[in-house]
Amino acid sequence: MLKKVSIFIISIILLTSFAFAQTDSTSSETDSEDIKSKTDNFVDKQIEFPQPLQILMEIILGVKGTISLSGLIIFIVSWILLLIFIASILEFTPFLKGGIKWLVAVLIMILFSISGGTNFIAKLFLGLTDLFNFLEGWSVGAMAFSIILLVIIFFILSKALKFLRNYRDGIEAEEEGRKIGTSMAVIKATGEWLNPRKK
View 1: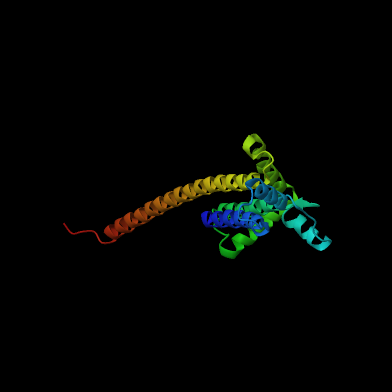
View 2 (view 1 turned 30 degrees about the vertical axis):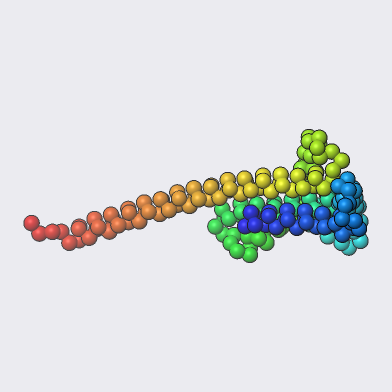
């Protein structure tokens, strides 16, 4: 599921960003620097939410005040990936299944965002782009790099969780098999005791 969601997120974001520049291009020979400038201006655009929506954004995503479009996208992607990751962790609990698991995951994410967790992760990954010179002054590239890095890390973590889950299931199956074997041996021994063979 994480793989499908990740591919969908990356595709939509990148296509949306570059489509904006292509729409504004009036010449087939538009200079690449002009496209880069337009896309950067687009994702750097500051967004200010109306008061009711601002409260909702602060509670759910942890977004306070104005934020750039690229920053908002990073926040949303981080939130979705974290939600999926937390839901995957909750699968280890036998009493949280189906819709209840996702409801608990959403509540955990809201508490995490209110405490500043989503804000920290989003800014951390955006800050990592400063380590690469070719991304300097390139907002779209920095945003895309941050999203790809987020997806890769959460993909690795999801694989690790899947391995642990399979390992746990294997141990449980082995333990269940051992219990069944013990029960069969007890039944057999009891049967022989109740019906001893005549010599």
